[in-house]
Amino acid sequence: MGLKILDVLNELMRYDDIYACMVIEKGMGGIIPDKDKFEKEVIDTWEVLEDSINETFNVIERFSKKGLDKMFFELEKYDVMFFILHESNMALVSIVPALSNRGLLEVAMENGRRKIIKIVG
Amino acid sequence: MVDFKASVGMTELWDARKAGREVAKKTMSGLGGKKPDFFLLYSTIHYEKYGGFQEFLDGVWEILPAGTPLIGGTVAGFMCKEGCFVHGASAMAVSYQNMDVAVGFGRNTKRNPQKAARECEGMIKKQQRKEKYKNNLFLNMISGPTKPTFAGFGSQWVLKEKIAEKIGPALLKKSTQYLQKGHGLEDEVICELTKHINKDDIVFGGSSTDDDKIIKNYQFFGKQIKENAIVAMKINTDINIGFGSEHGLHSTGKKFKITKSSQNNRIIEELDGKSATDVFFNSIGLTKEQLTEKIHDITYFYPLGFKDKDDYLCPHVVGSIINNIFILSYRIKGKDIEILTTTGKKMVGCVNKAIASTNINKPKMGFVVSCTARLDSLGNHVYAVRDILNNYFKENSFLLIYTAGENICFPKKEYHAFNETFNIISI
Image (cartoon, rainbow over all chains, first blue to last red; front, side, top):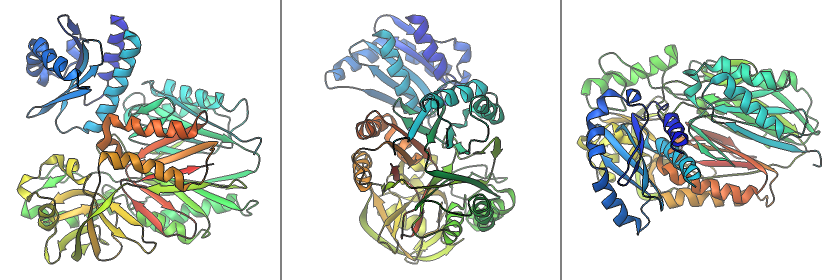
């Protein structure tokens, strides 16, 4: 299962404007593609994200009852996109440049989420 | 229409050659062994980096029967039964006995749009001198706008420098004319094309683009890759074609007179005698100082519009700002302009209205050209549009492409080149 999810993440990493991505799971860390593929400039942001997974899930869980579907952090230069995998304690996360065409990337993320949901079952 | 067959195929493969092969194979498999009478091919820009478009087309022609009329080009995304995609390729093939197909292209659409239109139309006319059937459909793809880069200013959507305002419009004009980087001038191409066709014909197409960065785009014609071209296909058939066009935008009631403009009302300098940028942004509660490169997050939801002779409200997106002036993709017909607006719900809701306009309840196939601005605005909610289309077409094929602008001319109506619209033809 993990390898198949990794394939989905590696596909997402092919988009020019997806600088980093992973699937996070509460209390379990996450599934991460080879970090060498990440844009170097987002590594700092990435580390903050990794450190705050559990806190992030506290928020996700609270709002899940209200049908939380996705969540964005808009930072100065980057956006962090969380696509929640409903009823699974998992989320697909990516870091994209703030000036990207976010709507198009949302479609890429949505397709990634749908594929992962199929894999997770 | 017993022998009518339509098929849509798609691929998400990244390798250009393999993707070309796969999209052709999947599309052909839906024709049940019949030879296609035409093949429409669309892909996202990514294959430029993953093998190149010639490889992609060569892959398609490994599968496609020689001589099949083919047109298409690069798009920001596409939608079909399988989903909505911003990477990959899709194609539509049709096989039908009572159908004659001719194809043509015209070069240098940005340098001389009228000549390009005539070249394309002339090429089509040479192949199809006699019309056997009563209905004509002109499908087209025209090279869309590309963002020029000016030394000292770079390539930006918002320039606040006064000097940029002074020299920007002239530079843009020269860049469009000589370098073919700038306005797409698709409206001028379509204006000329529609002068040479019957009033009952349907013109239906869009502007090729990339992943909405507006840097490069390509057109496909047979085995050739083209830039700054129109590629078109005339389909003469006995089939009645349903058509519809909607956008879900409405007037905010904020209306202005264009008091100063240039380049055929594509560059708006003053509204009601004041700075066009100030008037526009103050009307939607913003100041010029608040503008950032993310300008399209705002302007997609507040396009400008005007009513044409048919009383159709035509939306035009403010593409970029140079201090006091703003630039539109297409010329505004007339001097009256108003600010339009919409919501995501209305953007989705208008799809049902467009479908209803076709007057075809049980479609055998459909083709949709829609604006990338709608895709960018709706994001993953665009799947709501896919669900409506799935419900309408049921087990039959449809293909929607997201373009940098749309062009239509419906029977006995005026031609339109505009943004933010949803245009459908169904059979």
